[in-house]
Image 1 (cartoon, helix red, strand yellow):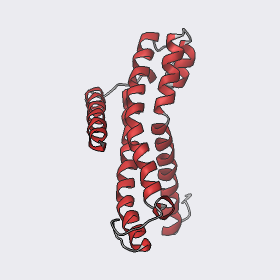
Image 2: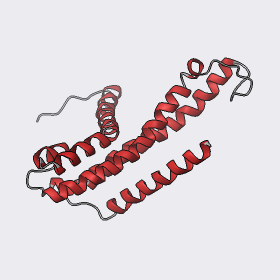
Image 3: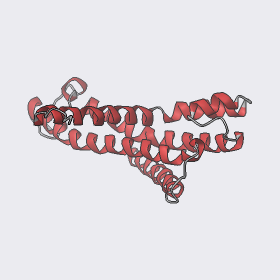
Image 4: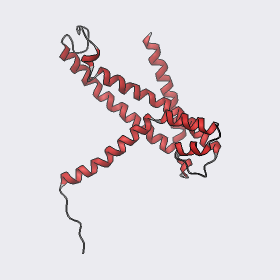
Length: 184
């Protein structure tokens, strides 16, 4: 009888982490690329190049041109929504771990001030959990897009996906309007 050799717990744990890290990286990259992919598929679909649009959305060759165009529009909407967490991540990186390079001081009115080290530490401490939330949102948007485009691959789309995607876009739009209004 062939019995697989026993592996130590650290070796098994490192194998478990690699697929998740790879999956996380792929999903985050896919979420960040939703807008350009959706725009490309939309332009190709409208230009009569349905094959290129299908390939961009990873649709099977039997997917109809109208369905591909509709999913390209949905991909563009989710891509615009994905810009919000990408912008938040960019801001958090600039104002978190690199705060001392971005703001030259004085730090009297800064979080953690009046010293530069205290301000830097306070901004870093705030940026880390918010960055985790933004990464989680991007991960969720990629998963939502995958489920939303399931019919293009011949799979069934859960009933909750389309309303969730549209409500997410609406919530993102309201967030953006509120954020811009508070800047004035």
